Image 1 (cartoon, one colour):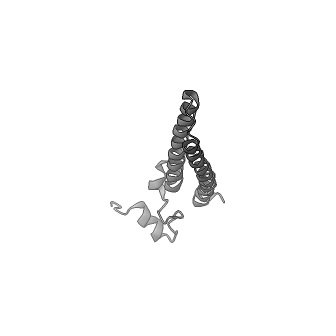
Image 2: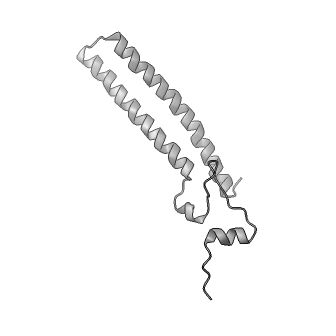
Image 3: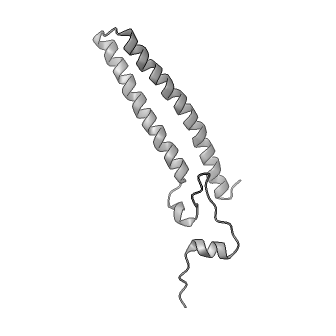
Length: 110
């Protein structure tokens, strides 16, 4: 006799609640093909984007300094953006830590 039920149906049949992450996405065995949850992956992708933008701004500031460009307004604009990115990176780091704790709860470790 062949069992055509999915893992999720079998879990729910046995009275086990389906674990879901903070965004409401299920976190069953099917989603556990990666060590990270979807939320963690999203946060890490955003961290990488912020880091890449910050690196580009730092290169631009260095180029301005090396070429002798003294446009104070432009430099101040880039430095303000860099500060915004630093603040965003700090917020993302806190969110990354929360997402990692959430993964531990979903796995039953907390």
